[in-house]
Amino acid sequence: QTHFIFHSLQAKMSRPVQARRLEGIDKNIWVEFVKLAATYSKVNLGQGFPDFPAPDFLREALTRALSGGNHMLHQYTRAFGHPPLVKVLAQFFEKLLGRDLDPMTNVMVTVGAYQALFCCFQALVDEGDEVIIIEPFFDCYEPMVKMAGGTPVFVPLRPNPPKDGKLMSSADWQLDPAELASKFSERTKAIVLNSPNNPLGKVFSRGELGLIAELCVKHDVLCISDEVYEWLVYDGKQHIRIASLQGMWERTVTIGSAGKTFSATGWKVGWVVGPDRLLQHLRTVHQNSVYHCATIAQEAVAQGFQRELMLYGKPESYFVQLPKELQQKRDWLVQSLDGVGMKPIIPEGTYFLVADISPFKSDVPDVPNSDEPYDSRFAKWMVKNKGLAAIPLSAFYSEAHKNNYTNFIRFCFAKEEATLKAASDILQKWKQEKTSS
Ligand code: PMP
Image (tube, rainbow, N blue to C red; front, side, top):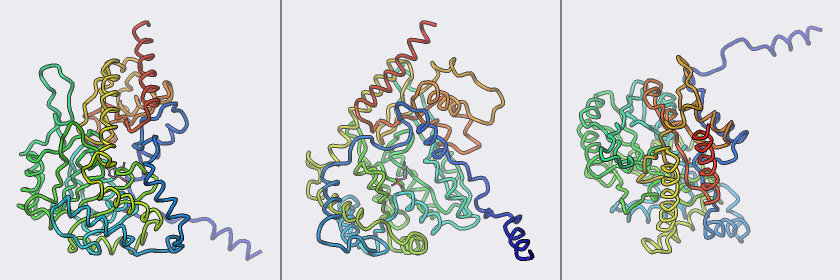
């Protein structure tokens, strides 16, 4: 009897279980919208992943790694990156950054770019530090800064609509130099840069990067540069790596992702390139959290990079072919959205496109004084009623600024032609129903 009472008392926990650092960051846009898309969508242009296959050479590399003679590929590898992968990444980035790199100290492999970001914030941001984040931003930056005890400081890209009635471009969204400068102070530890930018597709120009670099040097601030879309740049634009600008190498960590680079988001292989002085601390976080990412996936990605190193700049290179194909998909979606009046903002890079929902708003009435931004309600309504999934732009803004941008949704166009066509059909039919009613 006593034994039973003891157990039932023990079973009830009344003490708070949640660590304080999780306060206010429990909600997650992806958990919510991925579930909605899985339940309702017929066509999913929401979350960013290709629905076309990863390239043959990469899949073949994985098959070889899996069934080849080297059974050690099923075991642990070096914590900070499988040696063949860090070696080839170092060779590749030597070319891109124009400097010698040591594969063992200047490169670290992570579980996707997500974990690279996590390592950066945990290793470099202290209680009370401020971290500047440019809006709109890939949503996890904010909770990751907060979990590290830091304070995010937001600075928006401001849209300047073109006067001649042309479609807006992501290049029309710009930082106000004075406003940006005003965010830097003694408390600033780092700035997060994401170029090409998710969700807008903005590719920061040399001038804009120069301005950021100048402020970083002036205030002795670190730069966490998320460049996962580095190869997805269109119309002959050039992706410039901020680490290659004067004074920036020693204060920059550059983050990449095989998921985006080789259209294999599920593999979760990412990396960080930077000076040992910074990476040594990232290694401490990494070795005490995940230790390393799947050996076999690292081996296959290493082979993918060896191929790309050989074909560098040639027409057969995947890094040349993929953006070409995606540019066609972008142009197709731009036309089709423009055709139904959902004005697109033409992205210079990434595989995302942001579009203005104004002409469709009459079908989804506003709820005054609701906590939920209008575009979020619109996107939910659209997936439930039209079967088309997209992500509200407000999800990429801080709480304080969410309600300034509630007229846009983001589509992912890394999709098969048939998927894009199906999305376009849904919008056209919707438009017709509206005009005939
Ligand atoms: N940074 C940005 C800007 C992204 O868009 C994403 C993926 N959506 C990531 C990082 C995470 O990349 P990974 O899938 O390699 O973890």
